[in-house]
Amino acid sequence: MAVSSTDVALLVQRAGQGEQDAWDSLVDRFSALLWHVARAHRLGDADAADVVQTVWLRLLESLPRLREPAALPGWLVTTTRHECLRTLRRSGRELPDDDIDLVADRATDERGPEAVLEQAESGELVRRALTRLSLRCQLLLRALAYTPERSYADVSASLDMPIGSIGPTRGRCLAHLRRSLQDEAPHLLGEG
Image (cartoon, rainbow, N blue to C red; front, side, top):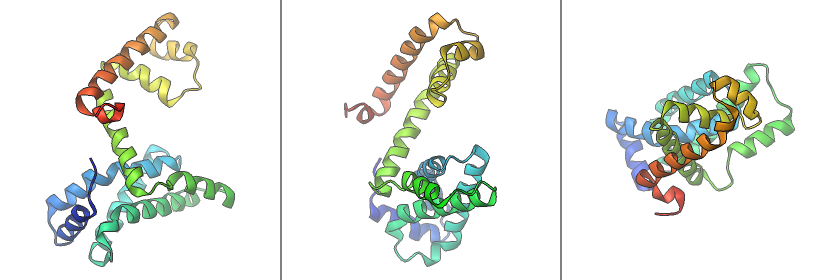
């Protein structure tokens, strides 16, 4: 779902006037973007959650002073990136300058905040579709996607699943996921 700059400016204006529904809309629309940037910095779940919460707090404090409300996605990306780097430094995991540049390049996609937001929203659609799968499928697909270096033997042991059934089960789970996405978001599959 693309968000026009006019819509964003109007939401920022209304949220700045204290309208809770406008604030809720901003949070709903842009939370995935903040999480995407935080994850690109390879923060743990707790640190990423702290960063996202801090960025929302900074936005709340800054709403009356935003000079270009329509540029909110860029402001959110920049602020999230700065908070991530501050968190990395504070946790003693300060990176050498070259590594910070590498992480920053990965976190600030050259396609711009709108493209990053669209990618983050697509990821959210996939995550929601995953929750509609059976628990067995969710566990298997997450184990294979989030830790691709794991061997089938490791996955077999952790999920108490015969090694020979991992591949076929994975195929069936992906087919279910694809059908779910076709119903909700055919554009993700190049069909919309």
